[in-house]
Amino acid sequence: MIRGAVLLTGALVLAPAASASAADVAVGIPARYFLPSRVQVVVGDTVTWHNNDHDTHNLVAVDGEFDSGLLGMGASFDHAFDTVGARPYLCTIHPSMTGEIDVVPIALSVPAALPTAGDRFALDGRAPVGSGPLTLQRAATADGPFADVAAVPAGPDGTFTIALTADATAAWRVIGAPGASPAVTVPVAPRLQLAVRARRTRSLVVLSVRTRPVRPGETVVLELYSRERFAWLPAGRARLDDSGAISFSVRRGLRRVARIAYVHDGAVVHSAPIRLWRVGA
Image (cartoon, rainbow, N blue to C red):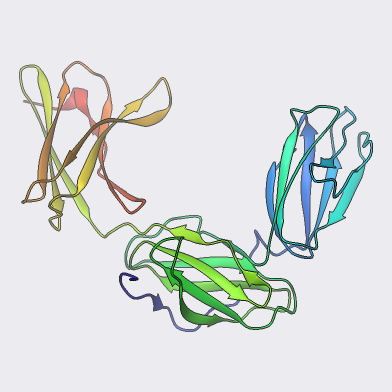
């Protein structure tokens, strides 16, 4: 069963989808790698590879569909993809150079910024020109079952943008005569406040966490920032009690920054960061 109901923000919006609007997709060869190494296109698109490296390379499809021959510096090769499926390829001169073209019936991309409940977001995509009517579908998970949500009008070049209001994490796809797009999951963070009170004891810094509104039984994670790895790393995990509260203890003397993360259905809400060495008694 699909949780919640999607809210359409008025009519579906038509706008160019910059990431999926070109029928001629470029892949560069700046050195001994392909950039990007993996590309999604729709049926009928042409991919053009440009060799900007001083070395000679080639492009050979694993299934034998295409072979560019030798490409010297400044040379290009293009190939049109007419059927759905994954096309892995490599440079046989430098076998560590690998890439893949994923040909789909309809392309659909997730929003660059994941929404919080109540926020507006958009799904951009593209179908082959002349695909006919398209339909947006939604499911609780990418495995379905999917249910129709709304008609999707596409522009003359097959591009479309669907404006929505977030309510809960869901999987989305667009279907039409060419087939169905790969499902994309959009995590939706709840509108939640993580209140953290820090106090110092003789040997520890105690972080008391409470959610507003209360989320009893949900999981929160203590994260510490690692200056060596330039990343937030999990340092503890606990379930909130019946009042939506929990405490974490961190050894004093660590010159670290801490924060609390609430994770639910793939969406994350973070507390404000806390500099542990500045916490008073």
